[in-house]
Length: 443
Image (cartoon, rainbow, N blue to C red; front, side, top):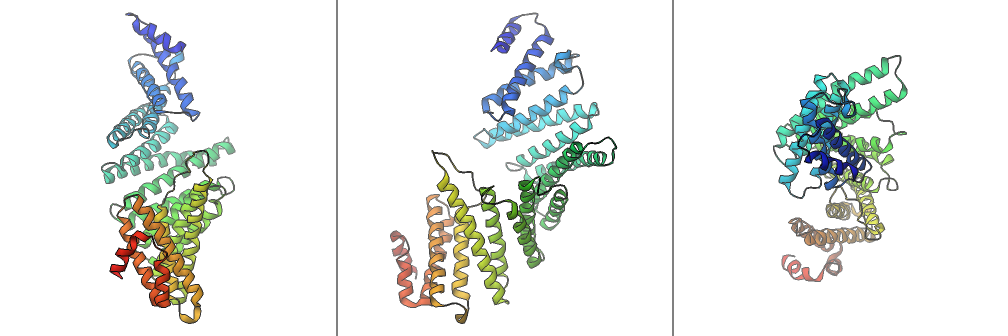
């Protein structure tokens, strides 16, 4: 590569031209930046880009840059932001948590230095971008250490970004010279940061003050939705409705249970209008799973309303079935050794929950509302899905396999109570043979 050859020559010279060396490193960094932007990034590409730009940045501090190095004042903040992005991306390639943390800390440090330069040169738009990126990297750090402190830093950064992006949005709306493209760009940036803020509050709610933080998350998601148009950004629109539904579901665990569960269901149903199995199968399966969970919880709290209780469990069955079927289709459609997209939920938990919903219908439906054949079908389905959950969790060596085994026993007892000894024999014929000794000893 000609650039590397030129750098070697310049580095070997005792009196090399600082500007020329800086230009060579800048060209090298830009070359790899283009490769990364094309989607062909790797850990090695990121490392080279970081190393090249980190050689340029001290030169910008020590002298007036040449025209090629960016005589304007934008270069330091922009390169610093790029270095922050590259370190954040590099963390995804690191296998150990310690290496991930190190990359994320370097990313945050690069963003903070870039932010100082943007503020120094009054580059308001760049400040908004960098603050948003800083919020993202602090949120990522929260996964590995000091979750509360890092999430609070994340929220503070997002709020700073929103102050800037709201002002830009207002300018795009009110300025006579603003174009539709300027308005769309400002709206998209503002809405994206609101969604990020909502997710940061949702994560913080898992560590304390859940009601206040979940209400803040809901407010942020709702604000984001004001700027997403389903015809233009259907997947983004669906994604935020899914996030909103999850925030309502979590809030239902703390207050206004039924009301918030119904709000969660409404949000999930809107999300599924856009997160279809054809367009976004992994996302569709996740939202169907979320919908099943919300309906299942409604069923559990509706003991005094038997008709509604059974309706809710029926809806849960439909949603969980869709989630499992879509996930199964994704797995079966993976060809030529390709791995299907990862699921955002535990497929074996979905099987287990689906089994529970079938069990509730089989054992709680009044005799005059469900014939014996239908009751048996629900018990067969419950047993099948609990076996799926047990087998999957056992293969993962998960402690949850014990939970699935408990539900297997419950279902077998349900066969006996609903269908007698013949029903129990039917159930025992449907479980893995190696489990029979332990099952028989506990019946």
